[in-house]
Each structure stands twice: as C-alpha cells, then as structure tokens.
Image: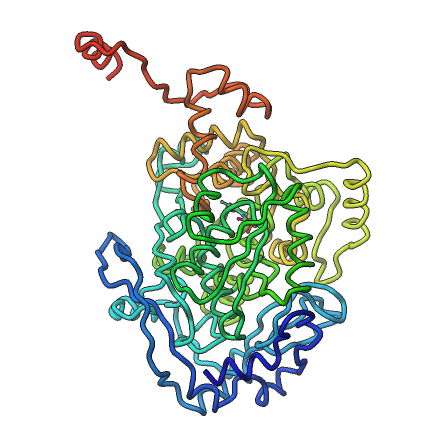
Amino acid sequence: MLLQANMLRKMPSSRGFRKNSVRSTPHGHNEGAFRLDAVRGLAYIYYIAPWISVCHRGFHVTNMALLTNKQPTILASQKISQTATVFQQCISPACKATYSVDEIRVACDKCGDLLDVVYQWDRLRVPGSLDEFEKKWQRRHEPHCFSGVWRFHDLLPFVPVDQCITIGEGQTLLHPSDGAGQFVGMKPGRLLLQYEGMNPSGSFKDNGMSAAFTHARFVGATRAACASTGNTSASLALYCSVTSLMKAVIFIGSGKISYGKLSQALDYGALTVQINGDFDDAMARVKEVTQELGIYLVNSVNPFRLEGQKTIMFRVLEALRWEVPDWIVVPGGNLGNSSAFGKAFHELKELGLIDRIPRLAVINAAGANTLYQLVEKQGLRWNDGKPQMATVENYFDEMDRQGRRASTIASAIEINRPVNLNKCIRSLQWCDGVVREVDDQEILDAKARVGAGGLGCEPASAASVAGAKKLVAEGVIEPDERVVCILTGHQLKDPTATVAYHTTDQEQFNKVLGSRGVRRAAFANRAVAVPNELDEIIKAIRLYS
Ligand code: F0G
C-alpha cells in the first residue's frame, strides 16, 4: 500500500489537510502523488456482481457485490501521462488557479469559487465517436464495463480505470412514458423519463458517489462525510458498508429527511449526526467539521462527484442511440446535476462527439426557489464568468434578515443555499437554459401521474415532470420536441407523501399535505374499505374493477 503511504504524507493526521496539501500546476503533476513506486504496491480493488441478468437495455445486479483484490496491471508510462493530463481548476475565468488531482479541495484557495476537474483531451485517448462505447457492452462481465459510470471512463479519466470503485451503479433506464407525456401536454413518444431510482441506493447519487468515493480512496481517505436531505447520505452509507473501505459520517437536519432514506443510513451503519436545523445548516456545519477533522467531504461541492453525474447524460444519449434530445428537465436542489449535465454536454461538444447541446430546464420547488428567484426574477447570469455576485449576496442577506427557510414536501430539494449556484448558471449559459418553480400541489399531481405509469419516483423527482408541464403550457417546450425528465429518486424513498396523497383519511391528508398548501389529490388511487365478508369483497371488486 505504498500509494496510500505517499498520499497520507499529504493528508493531515488530524486537521487542516487543505492547508497541508501540495499545490502545483497541471504541468507540475509528475512529481505529485501518483508515484510509480506507489502504483506497483497498490491494491486493486473492485467489486464484481457475480450474477447478472439481462434486462432490455442493460443488466441488473441481482446479487451482493463481492470484493476481490488483485495487483494492478497498469504500466508506469501510462501512469505519468494520466497524471499530467488531469487537474482541478477554479471555474472563475479571472482566477483559473489550478490544483493537482490528488488534492482534497472543495473550493479555490485563491478566490473561494468552485473547482472543476479539467482534462487535457488532446493528450488523452478519447473515442472518435460515441458509439464506440457500445463495445463495452460485450465486456460487461468486467465490473468497469458493467458500471453505468465507468463504462464511460474515457470521458472522466481522473484516475486509471482499474482504481475506480464500483458497486454496479448506473444500470438505469430511459423509458418513454405516454401517460406522463399526456399529462405534460406532449405528443406520444416525445416524453422520456430517466429512472435514476434504479441505482443501488435508489437515487442518482450513486453516479456521483462512485466517483467521489474513488477519489477519496485514491487520496487515502479513511472517513467520508456529507450533509444530506437523505439520498447522498444513503448512497455514501451504502458505498461504505458494501466496500468496508471507509467510515461514513452523515449530517442531517432534524425532522428533514424521509423515513425511507433515514432507514437506509441507519441500516448501512453510518454514523448519523442529526443536528437541530435544516439542510442549509447541516451543509455549513459539515464543511467546518470535515476541515477540522480531516474527513473527506462527498457533497456535490466536491468536483469529482460531478464527474460521475455527467454519466447520467451519457446514458441518456446511449439510450437514444447517441441522438441529442431537445430538452433535459431536472429538479434543482444543491444544483449538482444541472452543473454536471452542462459540463457533460459542453465537453462532448468540444470533443466533437455531439453536434448540438440540448436545452436545460432546472426546476425548483416553490418553497426552495433561490435559483428561480435569482435567474428568472433578478436576471442573474453566468456572463462568461462574470456573474453579478452582488445580486447573489443581497439575495442571501435579505433571506437571512427575513429568517426565510426552505419548505417543501419535496424534502430532497428543500435547500435555500445551493452550493453549486455558479456552476449551474454556467450550465444555463452553455445549454440556453431556463428555470421554473413548481408548488407542492403541482409536484404531487405530477408524481401521481408518473407513478400510475409504473416505476414511480419520489416527490423531488416529479418536480421535473411538473416543470415540463409548465413549460409546455407556456409554449417554451413544443409538444413534438423530445424531452427527457430526470427522475432522480425511487418511489419508495418517501412513502409518507405518497400514502398521504392517496389516502381517504382527511386527517392524515391535512397533516402531511394540507399543511403545505396541497388542497386536492386529483389523481389519487384510493383504497376501498370493505368489511371482512366474502360477499362484500366480491361486490366491491365487481363495482370498482
Ligand atoms: N432529487 C433528489 C431525489 C435528490 O435527492 C436531490 C438532492 C435532488 C433531486 C437535487 O439534486 O442537488 O443535484 O440539484 N439531494 C441531496 C441529498 C441534496 O442530500 O441527498 P441537485
């Protein structure tokens, strides 16, 4: 484990690792931590799903992952060129400070802005066309070809593929849904739903977590932490428990996380820190705590997380046989997805792998609508890297003055201070994007229509469908355009909201939904109460079926 030893020299034993970490330009990376001696001794860890069954467009892991160790086969010369071609860089064009890929950072030291993972593509092997990735399907017995993230490794090559950690993430489905399409106002076949709830932990987070986890291991981390509205924590806890490679520490706002998600973190054995506050409070705290204790932070401020989330778009293109859709519609919370999607398309276009970029619609919940307010109401723009930061600062000052807190039934996106704001507005520029807000009523009605078509979703995910409906009604989206809505989390994540929508119990409805301004359940599928008598049961079935 020489690599780890080298890495750990740069990691603090207890605190302040960011100060200790070595800073270098991308061209100075060769003496960085990817040392050749290290490579030789590195345990090559990956996970094999031993039993796989074919589904219509890919494969499902149907059994527990199995850990194996094996020596790396990578050649020394490949290692050096890999190192020199990837680095982290401040997204601000006025700053552009660079940092080595083996540093642990969530912000630029010089100016405090967010960081990107940047590749020198001309020095990397990139496929000549996207359909080259189809060759990976024939090698799906190999874990990194099976993974819906790592089969696109050529487009996120920040560490060599044999050091990438997978638990079988990204076996997700792009599904045409005419039921939801009709609800949205689309012509048949034009609305497609990307079911990210099919990931191992039940949400899109596994795409990013496999990448952040890979980077965390790469730099020798032994503990990883996040603040979460539930899905990031479930995903981190799962990666830690399946691999036993790291310990998970999760921060959640008290009473702010649905039971499905909380149950996952507890079951998977994460250290769960429940703080008195909401996600925004937890996020601020986890940044402090991770810096203080030298714990690796896996929230989407971590640029490596977003590299993994780019692959959601690669899979959408793959399912469309590499045709670019007209629109991608995605819920917006901490704005990691929208940031990652924009970067994915921007890079594909730069590489000449696509000829146009789809438009992006980011949908806020009305009770957590910072992005909507700033972009659509106050005109905030990326402006080629010169966003009006005074507008942002005033907005947050005013929010604090009024004591405004995020509040929506879509608890996953109940966030008022999105950490990826700047990257998201950059994506909006790249993708000619728009932002909309939808209220809890609109979210739950959309969720019911998605669920009625099968493979349902959690409330936050349905914001994308509700947002698409709004954009069609406004004439921004045309009914015959090809629209992909991202369903970010599984239907079983939040049964409380679902059951309250369908219930006949007015008290329960009022308690869970009425308190949030939801007045009706137009698409409810109500349970039929019958006495436990054969005749009555038969009568009821005849009457209702
Ligand atoms: N949908 C679901 C189901 C989510 O869990 C989240 C974020 C989002 C959408 C928003 O995505 O942050 O990329 O804009 N959940 C985070 C969490 C905050 O902690 O699980 P984003």
